Image (cartoon, rainbow, N blue to C red; front, side, top):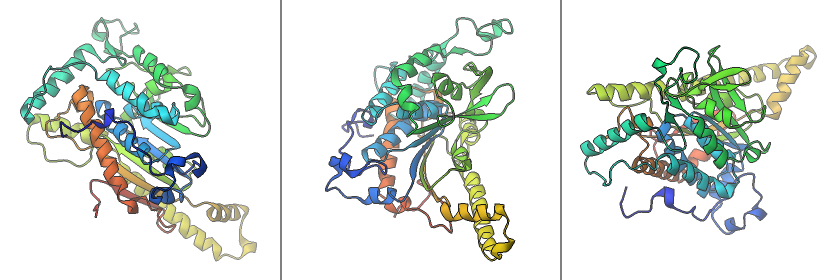
Amino acid sequence: MDATATPATQRKPARRTVAAPLVPDEQRSDAIGEPPEIRDLLADYASVALVLQGGGALGAYQAGVFQALDEAGIDPVWLSGVSIGAINAAIIAGNHRGDRLDRLRDFWETVSKRKVWHWNPEGDWMRRLRNHTSSSMTMMHGLSGFFQPRPVNPWLRLPGASGATSFYDTSMLEGTLNRLVNWDVLNDPQRRLSVGAVNVRTGNFRYFDSQIERIGPQHIMASGALPPAFPAVHIENEYYWDGGIVSNTPLQYLLEQEEMHDTLVFQVDLFSARGILPRDMGDVMARHKDIMYSSRTRNNTDTFRRLHNLRLWLHKALQKVPAERLTDEDRAFLTSMEEDVPQINIVHLIYQQKIYESDAKDYEFSGTSMREHWESGYQDTRKTLRHRKWLVKPPESIGMTVHDVHRDDPT
C-alpha cells in the first residue's frame, strides 16, 4: 500500500452515488443526478445479503468490503456470519446506517492497538518476523477488548473447575459487544441476522436467527468460541462452540430457506481453497488451515442448482398433466413455482494471502496488518463493483450464478 495514501480505515465514507434497493429515492437526495447503474441492477432483487466467513484477524478484510459496499449505497438486509464474521455482522446489523463504519473501526482499532515494534520493517523476511512476533504476543497476552489468558493453565485445573476447558477468558468481549452493538436495532424485523455455532454435546450445527429468536451477545460469542482457546458459551441449557468447526461459511443456511426470494449475495471468505504447493513446513501448516477452513461454495451452489433444475423439470412435466388428474400437492407446487422461483446471484470475494503471512495469520492482530487487510477488502470490492455484469440477476432457467472475483475474467 502506498505510504502516502490514506488508509481505508481512516477514510470518511465517500459521497454515495447510488441508493440501496429498499430505500426510496426521496429519502436519498444525495443520489439525485448521479449514475443509477447499480441502483437499477439492485432493483431486480428482493434483497441483498452479506455472508461473512470466520478467520480471526483476517476479518478486517470483511470490514473493508463493507465500507466499499456502503459507499456504493448497497445496504444488505440479511447478514449471516460465523466466528469473526458473526462479530462483524452483528456490529453492522446492530447499528443505524450512519454509525456502522465508525463502530467497525472502533472494534478493529481496539483489538489491534497493541504496538509490536516502533518501526515498520521492510522486506518479506523482516515482515514475516514482525508478524511472528505479533502473533506470539497475542498468544501470550491476549487482545484488548477481546480475550485474555487465564491465570492458571487449564491443564492444571481440576475437571469441571472454572477455566478447565479453555486457555483464554473471553468475558471482556461481551462488554465490547454491548458497547458497539445496539441490540434493539439488531433485532429489528426489517433486518435479519443469522450466526452459526455448534452444540458441544450433540455436535449439531445450529443457526441463531433474529427472525426466529432475539439475538444477544451470547449468541455472537458462541459463534466465535473456538476451542481449546475459548470456552463454550451457555445458551438455553446447552453449550456452544465456534460454528467454523462444522462449516466456516453460512451460505448453505441462506440457500436452504423456503422463503428465499431473488437475492444478490456478497460472500466474503478469508481462507482460499486454491493455493500454491507448499515448499516448507510453514507453508504446509498455512495450506492445511486454508483448506480446512475454506468455504465449500461450489459444492453448495452445485447442489442448489441441481435441485433448482429438478423443480423446473417437474414444473414442466406437471403442466402437461390434465388438470383433473392433479393432486392438491401438485397444484400447490405449480402455484409456488408461478409465484416465486428464486434467482440467486453470488459475488464471491476471497482474501488473498500475502507472501509474508504464515499459518498464524488469523491471530496476528497488529495494527499494520489490520489496516492492510481492511484496505485489501476495500479495493477488491471497489474493483468488483465496476463490473456491472456481475450484478445482473440470472435468468430463471439458470437459477443461480457465482462470480469468483479472483478467477472470473474482469474484462
